[in-house]
Length: 126
Image (tube, rainbow, N blue to C red):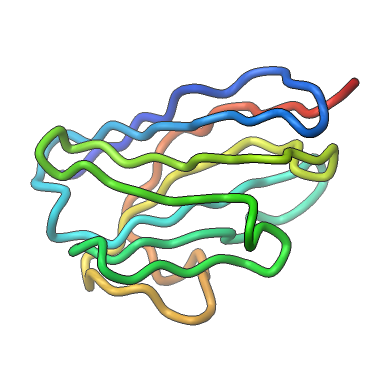
């Protein structure tokens, strides 16, 4: 069974960059699409980015377009979320997730993803 473990979270100032990573084990990552889902305090998880199994297609929520980049390294069974120009409203626990279908839908929805990591905290504050 595929397992995911996030890392790289921390406390940063507004405008700073931060890179999150998610390591996969138990299955080959190249068969799965990968999504990132932040959950702010008192809020539902909301998808902000997705990358297809091949890496050829990506999608982003409007709130992060132009600031976040998603990538994957299938050889190392790891994928990444590069966050730039961070804002206080980006503060959340960030979860990575994998979808067996392998493609990214326009709407990055939790119900489409099969496996989830434990989350890593990102805090943006001056």
